[in-house]
Length: 445
Image (cartoon, rainbow, N blue to C red):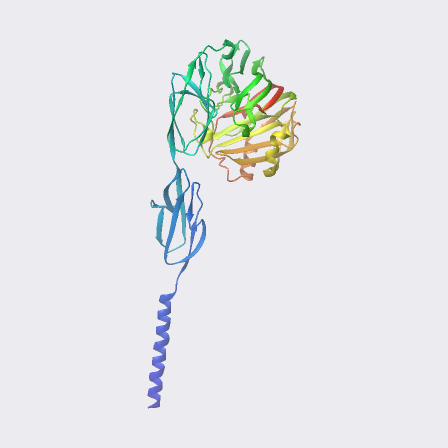
């Protein structure tokens, strides 16, 4: 009898233990990870990061910033969900990324006369016209005085929050003929002068476009004196002799960039490709830039620099400043330290090879990246005057390779390089200097 009781108790104990383990197996929760990735134009709730979850439902909400809209969720790089409020039944490690899209706004520019000219940021635009820009853009609008008409509107800064109509009014008035700048190109001489604030002239050799000369006084409200870019006997002269220069936007300090370029420049400017056998815009950065220059300065705060635009499109009429993926690269050859002082708190340094007077040398350069509506990068030698008066050859691909390592977040890949510009920036106040460019060439490296 005792044996039977003991046997029954053992069987009951085994059943209790088995039942416990069976029930416990149903209660085990599997652990997974949900990663929410960052994306420009918005945020998420919960915030971006890595979260430990179990086999359970996960809720996340996408929140677009002002001027942006939610477009979709991308789950595990493949699944698409269009509801900003995402509910997922988690059954494995999961990666989530919200995609936001910048809203577009329309700006209608109108006038009481036909063929009026407005400077929109850097671009001369004939109105009436309709602009489509990302909402939240800032447009600097300057009406240009014409030969028979004077604008009644002053320069204005427009913050584009929604679709907008603007009317620029002109009154008929005789303007002195010396105001009207007709770029001169006779035989070996080509000249462009200020005013107006924008003027260009194409220099040809053997019938092939070689250079574009430009007076680009994009932020100059007024000045007394002369600004001139001249090509004469295969040399280029940039001469500035002005007093009391005032900026349209004083915070930017720089009032203009009189220059010469090879290739193209955005905003619908003319191109000079044929002479160089290089078709700009181009996605090939294997270029050697060669310059032989001498700066003589009496007064002013200035630089001498290459300027390049790397843009997502090869549309020659594009305004690159309206695209957040645009990269502007300036390689400063000479500079006054006051012009660069704002950079030095965020500057990096790197040694890069440069050919100076025919010898390959390692020079220390400062490198600066600043996030505007576009990416701005400045590369400047540690010694601001060392290259002045010398023949300098720079391998553009070497520069870009170093920049990709220093700033992997900057999209310097698969962009269209529009051309190579060479000129001088100068600031408000008095300036007097002459830049003589004895040689300015490019070739494939």
